[in-house]
Amino acid sequence: MSDDPFEAIKVTFFQECAELLGDLEANLLALETGEGDIETINAVFRAVHSVKGGAGAFGLEDLVRFAHVFETLMDELRSGRKECDDVTIKTLLRASDVLADHIAAAQGTGAPVDAARSAGLVAELEVLTHGVAA
Image 1 (cartoon, rainbow, N blue to C red):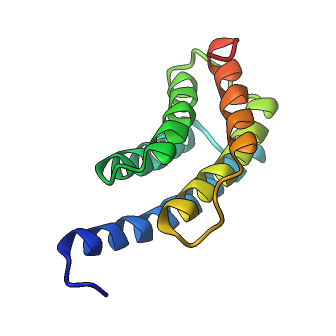
Image 2: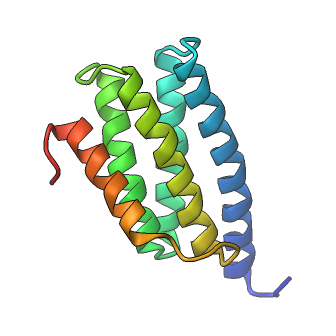
């Protein structure tokens, strides 16, 4: 490990991301099986929000942009403006996989993110959030 304190903080951020992704997946699966509630939705929102905030601190713009669109849909679900239906949950599960890809790419442990797959999920999330892709 480097003596650079910034690098040490970055290592901690990616460790937290691994935990957050585990929580995110567990909570989305709870929603999928009907075992989730508003607290589950809030937990998903917080996980994505935490990833986005840390990514912003490190200038990981691709990760921030993807997490922002994911977070915006979660905010709609939290507020009750959007119903947490099967289509939404399945899309969120796929989005969590792409979020994991973005994290791995930012960390340097994964392949570059498939831009077409990521853009497609962004469009799906935006349609679920706003009714149209932005």
